[in-house]
Length: 480
Image 1: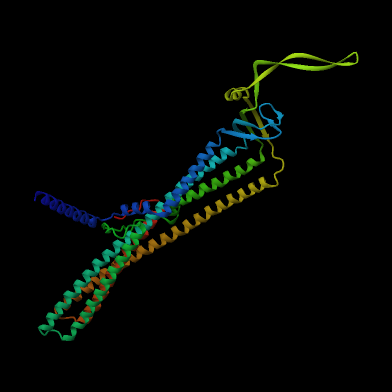
Image 2: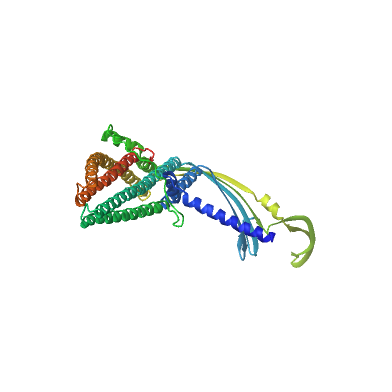
C-alpha cells in the first residue's frame, strides 16, 4: 500500500511539475534583445561570414609561418638487382642488395621582394574586413528583427483599437434597441448599427490575422521552433517628433559614413588590393634562399675487414731454361664481415649547407600580367567603395526625407484625429438624446475610426523611420 502511495505521489508530482513548466514556457514573453540574439545565433548568413573570418585568420597564420624555416625528413628502402651502384661505396656491383637511406632537409627564404611581409599585411587586412562584415550583418539582422518586432507591436495595438471600436458599436446598437423598444426610433434604425457592428467584427478579424502574419514573420527571422509558444514584451512607445529636426542631411550623411561597418570593410579591401600590387611586384626581384641537409645510408653488401685471415696456396707458372716450372707460395687472404646498421649510419653521415639566388630575367609576361591584374583589382575595390558610399548617401537622403514626411503625416493625423474625436463625441451625445439618427452616427464613427487608425499607422511609421536613421548613425536599435 505504501509502495502504491509513493508511486502515485510521484506521478502526481511529475504531472504538476510538467504543468508548471508548460505554463512557465507559455508565459514567457520575448524582449527585442532576446529576439535579436536568437536571430544572430541561428542565422545561416552569420554562419557563412563567421566561416569567412575563420578562413581569413587561417590564411593569416599561414602567411606568418612562411617566415620560418621549413623542415622535412625522408626515409627510403630499396631492393636492387643486377648491375647497380651501391650507394654506400659508389661502386658498381652485380649482386642483389638491400639499401636504406635517411635524410633531413631544411630551407629558409631570406629575400623574395618583401612578398612575405606584404602577404602577412594583406591577410591581416582581410581578417579585419571579415570582422567588419560580421558587424554589418549583425546590424542588418538587428534592424530586420526590430522591424518585425515593431510590426507585431503595431498589430497588437491595432487589435486593441478594433476591440474598443467593436465594443462601442455593440453598446450603441444596444442603446438603439432600447430606443426602438420604447418607441423613440423606428425599427429600421437598427440596420445601420448592425452593419457597423459587422464591419467592426470584420476589422477585428483582419487585425488578428495581421498579428498572426507579423508573429510568423518574426518567428521566421529568429528561426524559432513552431512548437514553442511565442509572445513578445510590448513596451510603451513614445515618439519624439523633433528628434532629428536639428540635424541637417549633410551631418546625417557624414555620421552614416563614419558608422557603417560595410563602408569600413570596403575601404579595408582597397588596402588589401594595394597589398596585392606589392605582392605582384615581388616577382621582379631576385629570390635568395638558404638550405641545409643531413644524409646517411645503409647497404647490406657493405663490408669491412674483420682482422682475421685464411691461408691459401697460389700456384704460379714460370719458364726456367725454356721449361715451364710451377712454384707454390702461401698467401694470407683477409676475411670480411658485414658492418652493423647503426655503425653504417654513423660512418656514412654527411651534411651540407648552401645558398640559392634566383634572378628573374624573362618570365613570359607572367609577372607583368600579375601586376596589371592587381592594379585592376585595386581600381575595382576603389570603385566598389565609391558605389557603396553613393548608395549610403542616397539611402540616407531618402530615409531623411521619408522621416520628415512621416513626421508631417503624424502631425496631420493627430490634428485630424483630434477634430474627428470632437465631432464624434458631439454626435454621440446627440444620438443618446435622440437628436441624431443612426446613419449619421455611423458616418461620424467611421470617420473617427479611420482617423484613429491613421494616427496609429503614422505613429509607427515615424518611429520606424527614426529607427532607420538610428541604424545609419550607428546607434543601438532599441524599442521603448
